[in-house]
Amino acid sequence: MSLKILTMRARLLIILLLTAGVMLPVSGQSDRGGSGEDLLSTLLNQQEDGSFNLEIDSLLLANYYKLITVNQRQSGVPGYRIRIFSDSGLGAKEEQQRVRARFISLYPGIDAHYHYDEPFFKVYVGDCRTRSQALKLYDRVKVHFPNPIIVPDLINVE
Image (cartoon, rainbow, N blue to C red):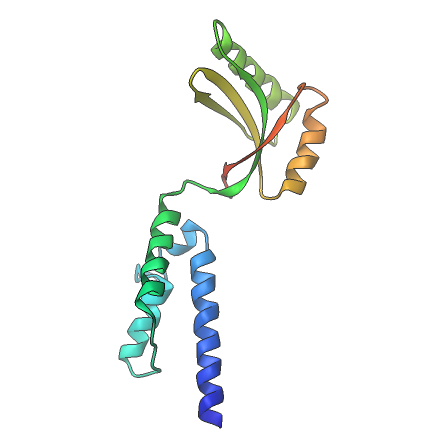
């Protein structure tokens, strides 16, 4: 009876650790205690010590490493930004710079990002983790910038 409970607890622990390892941001995956290994590799190395027996399906293992690779290529985490400017044509780049400078002077604590999506020059503001945060920023920004749009984007997290 106690062996089955221990096995179930060990399986639950492994599932939780794998889930946590997959959901960590990129910065958390790059280094595990100086060894440079991810969480799964650490668990597999402990298996060689005889601490416990770990059996992993090959498809689960392949998907785990595929997800880590995809996360390492991303330059941020999913979130929202507010687009306050989008224009093309003559003078659009200069207007983009003016709009960004005006935003930074009105809202000094909030980041503003340039973006060129041919043929449009755009300005995105904020790094909102949730749509609720984006809606709060949207309400503040629409006073000074007409027709802002909430846009899903990869955001910077600090």
